[in-house]
Image (cartoon, rainbow, N blue to C red):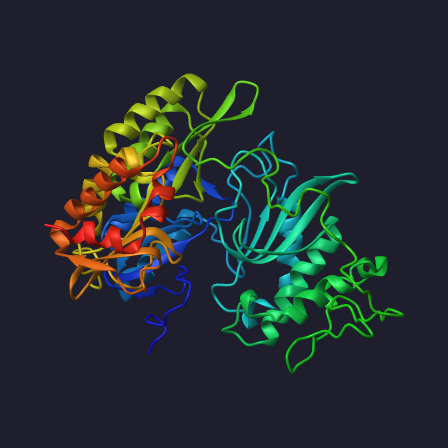
Length: 491
């Protein structure tokens, strides 16, 4: 297996990954976005060297598909010539409005930079797997609650001011909460988690840490002396399993030994934070207008299923440039944020985006569907995912209050986690998976070309069975897998 075909790799510009339709590269500009002219130049390069398809991922990365070994090198050279700085190393991600959102609890950028520096100083990047990531979320209008990470730090308000919740292995709802602490300690805990992950091997993730390790991470945090030792001098944690014993308790950050172990975690989240509720307002989809300051707004535009032909992105970026847009940022949730244009220009930008086929409303049913390129774009795809998704979105917008995943094969690239319903391509056609991932055994099948009709039958069943005030998602749960599968397969 060569470097291009290794599964689980992160397809950075310098290390493309083999997919069903050629090589794939992923770009994360250091600034989080690009001036419109540079985005145009990048799209033109993608047209020359790839299949001309651009993607914005659920994490807010930019992807270029359909490259060859030679064209990937040419693309890299042109990116360098454009002067686009690409972030490398362990991803430490902040929100797309970080530092400019008046609703955020704290600017996450300084803490993110300190974590990046600590990881670099400690030499952890080469020892961590390519999928390991850190999220630093300052709250506000566009949180990172939907983004999974090995370590996540989230700003919360408490009686002592602003603290940072440190959690591991999950998204805003599923991650395991460790502590809430001030910035210095939160940084130290984040780096200590990464140190523990390295001790388990390069294929390990934070989800592989033991309960004993997670408890021990919080067990020494009451020591104020922890802040005296910089993360760059972190000692090696137990080479056997990376665990820290609780008696005597040794800090993974410094070599200070406590007199006696704590009987419980010494730093606990402020009252009300254990529930995982979102501070600074509920997270929104990155589509529509977002207030920044006074009468200044940023306008979010989505890519349907995270993908658009490069020539259409060029057309939108050129229109934005003419309207005075200064920067186009990549946003988690498969969207672009347009900044700097006069408020009165947003309506014209909205019209152009809608005409080109972009998503301009957060209620657009396409935002509820995750669909990979599928056949024929991807050689691994068994079904025409985008055609199926479009047909379902057009006819069943009224019941799509849940996530529908349409996957060309069982790899489930567009939505690795479980979804309420998944239509997945296989040898037997388009299988329907209920409340699980694309890798799960489908409950029923029908021909791939006929999958939209099968879904419409399920939608009709929901409309007929749904109680007043009941969501479609709740109705699906109540109906059960067997009834859903029977209806999907019915002729």
